[in-house]
Amino acid sequence: MAQHGRTGQLERNYRRLLELCDALEAIADDLPHPDAHLCVTTVDALEPLIEDTHMLEEEALFPILLASGRPELHQTVARLRQEHLSDSDTAGEVSEAVHALVTGHAIVSPDALGYLLRSFFGSMRRHVHGEIELIRLFLPDHDRKMMN
Image 1 (cartoon, helix red, strand yellow):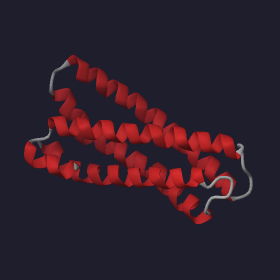
Image 2 (cartoon, one colour):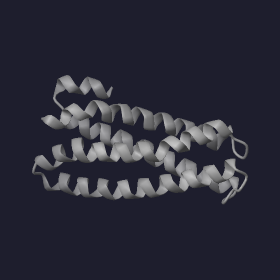
Image 3 (cartoon, one colour):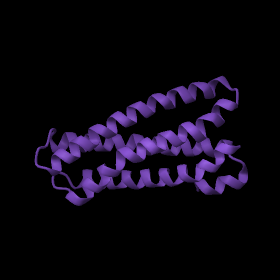
Image 4 (cartoon, helix red, strand yellow):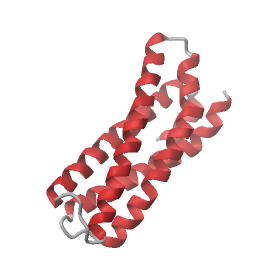
């Protein structure tokens, strides 16, 4: 399957997303005074990486799922597309709120920001691990080692 050639980049994106989730967790843990440099580098990388990852999933993962002909996988793809919209919107909110905190113009309380961050990175981690499992189900055995 030609889509499998793109799974290497998808795997790198997933690893980077998980690293950003770890950084967001560190930021949440350090509220109300997190490291400003960590805040800026993390949220500046977040939205572009999510956008690129969603594009790769659309190109590499979704065609594999849809080619199965199984109706439940068509529903899974529809659900994942909806999750992409939600992930993108929430990543924008996270970025805006963290940038505002760093510039001294916080738009939410530290408690609210901590909740937003924890909700986002928890959801993103589940999303990434779920899609890794889908890839493992559909990749030939020789490609599975890439996702470990």
